[in-house]
Image 1 (cartoon, rainbow, N blue to C red):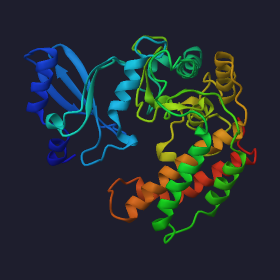
Image 2: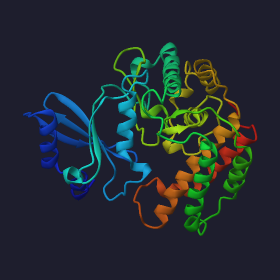
Image 3: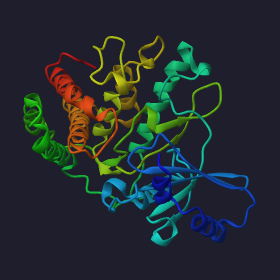
Image 4: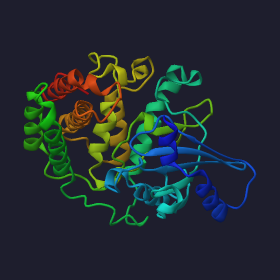
Length: 353
């Protein structure tokens, strides 16, 4: 990261003045950028004896829904007193004179995000089983939130959510294809998109949805037994179809019987080991917890992989246009067709739950 980029992320003096005004004076102050950032930027702040986290959009981004951190603040603030574990949000700021964008401040949690592998303390079959159970139980608690009771009744428009997802991601792919088709076509994605349009469920439950729920967007506490203590990255949250959340989570969860992954560089595989829940077991547990049935399961799992293909194709367009130096982006030339093939296998029943 260049020094210039960091300076665009945060004005340390202005931020110190803001935090002093709202949290009081301290002697210890430091700011560090979190390198695992997704679409929004995450900063770790030492403020006296407190460890804080700041979420802000990337510099130069306009305030569209994909980077709406104040929306993220609103949903986490609404969930603090529910069964959904979230870091407590402390402050929200829309004054761009402080660090150049909207941002919010929350307490930092201590624990592990299971991204590269399993912590040694969890590496036995009983504890491995509990990881999947905690993951799916927490998803069920999100879907059980009384969103009107916590003030989120206008947070989204649930009817037609699933149809809109298919349409939106089809449009994202068309945008990418404007440039990428000159390099190579991915005809299977047209076929998958048509199947999704034809098979979108007419009705679905209406709940709060996270929008990006997966194993590396949650944190497990430091104890010997897996306990899920925090759900992060709420920027895509809305009111919609809980089965889309489940399908998305399952698209990242590997079973030992699965074929080789479409994007091996970005695929976590430790849950293939003995003791981890299978996708079928996770679905059964979610159904028991929520009272919903995972009807049309091929649709929801194929939709998730279609969305992953859409993301990959947008990355490939950005690479071709010279708008990224991420070494993963050029690999999407081959990885997106592999994702399209995976979606087709799900549709054809060749990659079952």
